Length: 305
Image (cartoon, rainbow, N blue to C red; front, side):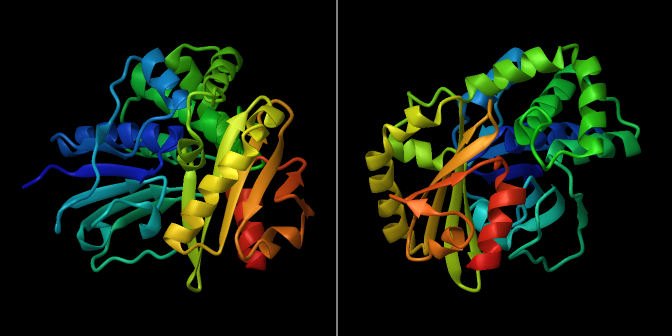
């Protein structure tokens, strides 16, 4: 039988990668046999910084899975965000911090989700409840994931559980939270090396509501104007995706991690999902105080679409 695979979502971010590695580590210890961490795409610069810092190899890259393959999902549950062939796999477990949508299984499973800032925070509790020691490297990865998803605990998604986990994980990993966290986040803001096509797919999530398909993508930066210098080319690539995937809306959120504000490029026939709340000028919506796709942008689109 094939080994169990732990899979994060497409266009993986730091939480998706690090939680896959941490969950594979936990399950290997609990089961007494190797469980394999996998990824569904290239690793971004922020995640590379974390993996290099803690000297951990990236998860195995896969594109699809065979029928009957045993899998564990982390940091997602929606099939539109998962691996090709997910519908025909045997899903053993899900560990997540997102809404549940477009998800069903034919057999019972372990499902553990909490409304916290990061999947790694949920995994932190699983390590604790199973009395499994968190090693320094794994602690560093989980810490990196929480820093990433909560923007150094500044995002509105941050909870007391996230703060508690960060405090303990930082001690195990032996790092200064502020110093390491800022350097890691800054590593992820170097967007010059990416083409416009790569840029809009770095952290893009495809959603669906009542047969209306849309994408919310997000990048972090220290200078929104620098990213907007490429606006025309970015819009060209977004329109290509809208046509190819039959999307009703594409929201490309550019987030300033220093000032905790965002500007979004909004395109598609359903831009009203954004314009009902934020004025759109020249396809741009200014979003002061917005940093979280999950808690601020997604609920807005879901309400208005």
